[in-house]
Amino acid sequence: GADVALSHVKEAGRNNFHFYTGEMNAHALRWMSLEVHLRHAVERNELRLYFQPQVSLADGRVTGVEALLRWQSAELGMIPPGDFIPLAEDSGLILDIGTWVIEEACRQMKAWHAKGLPPMTVAVNVSARQFATGTVPAVVRKALRDNGVAPRWLEVELTESVMMHDSDHTQMQLNELAAMGVSISLDDFGTGYSSLGYLSRFRLDKLKIDQTFVKNITTDPRSAAIARATTALAHGLNLIVVAEGVETEGQLAFLRDMGCDKIQGYLFSRPLPVDELSVLLLEQRMLAVVAVPPSVTRT
Ligand code: C2E
Ligand code: MG
Ligand code: MG
Ligand code: MG
Image (cartoon, rainbow, N blue to C red; front, side, top):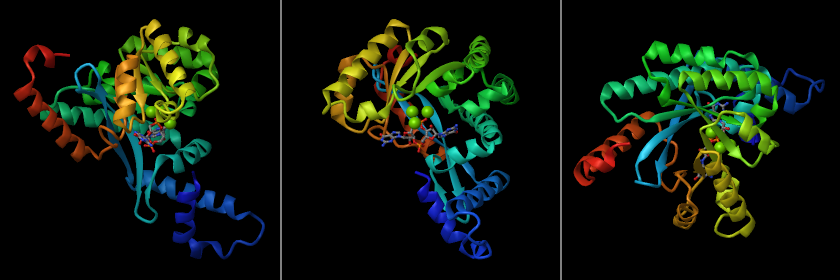
């Protein structure tokens, strides 16, 4: 959790701490210090998007990527999102950061299109705090328009907590995104507090089975049962099913057998910096041209 980044901060900022006395506890101090660093991170351009492929089990092709935030701090080193997203949410910095993520994803799509890479969806994670502002559709529309990207290539990932929180307000924004042609994906399914009612009320396109179920799918019959039932439920609602955190061939075989549509996980690829992803996609395109008949390559 946050302790990893916080201990970095403690080291990097040790000299800044001595003038504080016992009035504030050390944890609060480190948290504050991290917030200052994070504020600078945005200004100093220290945020990066990494991209993790999603692979279709029907034909083994990469159909899209998920954009995952990384903070490459000059002072603190590489900080994973689990260590700073909670802080970004608490402090409200997630609003600027979240807008940057959407814009950067669209800029990247524009660059890929310009390079002639096959089009694919790019999924961005959007937090409850962003939906609370009511501006998500406007931010998305502007980013797409500024970069000349068609809405169908953008996907918004949200968690069950987003739907719980002021659900009418969220529902309106999701409807607006859907009307634009942006697709909506429900992330980490099964780990939140949502009711099945949300699945019928909200206009979703995809459901992502959380990695905690995938992790144990071959060893724990209950995880397997949940994954299987979730897949059936999602397919009954015409949703595409994506399994997250697929690490082994055994998990892959199980998921394929279960009828899962797509996988995302270290087995195929870790989240990659943009240059490495481009290499992977170019290789795939060459393989497709050489090895696969044209009828199969059409999506
Ligand atoms: P998530 O959206 O559920 O993303 C999937 C996480 O699982 C990513 O962690 C990814 O690196 C990791 N993962 C993928 N495949 C595997 C695997 O095979 N094994 C294991 N053990 N892990 C795998 P990451 O990049 O550390 O991101 C963690 C969470 O931080 C994300 O979970 C998401 O909730 C949040 N996050 C990341 N980027 C953003 C962002 O731009 N905005 C917001 N609001 N949240 C973000
Ligand atoms: Mg996600
Ligand atoms: Mg997830
Ligand atoms: Mg997650």
